[in-house]
Length: 455
Image (cartoon, rainbow, N blue to C red; front, side, top):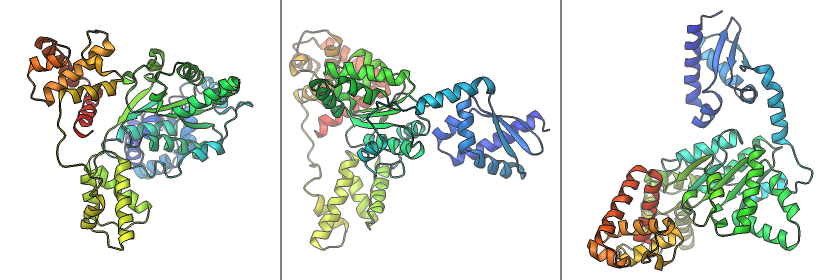
């Protein structure tokens, strides 16, 4: 029998090597909390935190651990997993797995229909990871590997065309490939609303509820569109509760975080914030280059590096436009029967590239963009209302007016309903302080500024 200190050193070295071979979410979810409690001549006993983890480790990581142990000790060991209360937890884990994978006889959703609704190109293998999306990717992979065990719900937000749908469908593909017995539903919030309307019209609300409340994984894209639809929010509230209480996985996407979705009921907002909220930012230059190379490889296209660099420098808004620009260059090359060069790319993209002339920014423009973002009316910017949902966006607009225009404090106050210059100063200081302390809000302000500058 090995001494306790030596056991600890061997296991630490083993985990260190394994960590370099696995993704961070996989390692953190399954191996980080393990502990080697004994080693004899032929066997190592590893303690997992619970029975579900023990079963997962036995099913997926035994060979990796054995190979790594041999690398560390130059000896072959059998690996046995235990839990602190193995006997007590065994029945509980068995019941959990039975409940998690149990099918309802009335369930109208099947795996084949789910697969058909997923884009076969949207997998984790085709997703390009960069600084702008690394955390969202890691969280999505963790959820896919351990549904309802890692983060529930998972809420992904970001601007249009940045990869939210790709990640959500990648989760769906991964779960269906690794857990074929699980019932996965991927829909848009618009589809959910339309199906509810049809169910009410045809007096089939019971069937509608059975469909969405007796599944294992629910992925809803663009959940922000349920805002302002009272009956849809009511139904989704009860669907969310039913699934969450049954320990089923919920994944949602939106163009903004829950707290910034206008006219969303507070009870839904709070539930969306129960799990993990992660955002996707616009890709940096290096990531845009990698995305274009990946797209070219998938389509078997030979694109010179200087052309890829040119497109990556010119298209910064989102991935959809980035890939669209690449396709446009390739099509232009084919139609003109010319080789793909930087000059050809410049010619092909000249009509879609943003104008070099900067947009003229006025206080009125700032007010229009801010009210559109927060779902308000333009007259709210000059009203006397002190309701937080109106007063706060007004302060944001005042802050941006001072930052982005040359208008004086009195001029800004006048444009906001004749307010005193001290009110403008207070608004500017308040928003500046919040930007410094709240990274999520800072991202929101950056998005609004970009909308103001680029339309």
